[in-house]
Length: 69
Image (tube, rainbow, N blue to C red; front, side, top):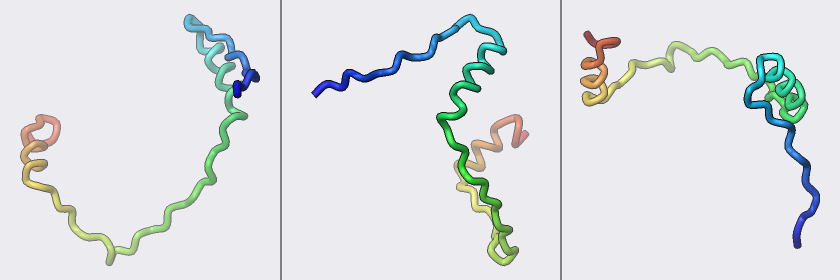
């Protein structure tokens, strides 16, 4: 069975400006619902332990100028 109902896509303006982009976003906003904001609970200090890094990862980071040198 073929579904013959379809919606034509919104006009695409590849050379548009910021105002055009904002208009596109405003038209699409009702299609997405934002998830409920969940506040993270603080972690008790007793559950925080040291970080273990594999030796290969440590050597990789040590060789990167932004981190090791």
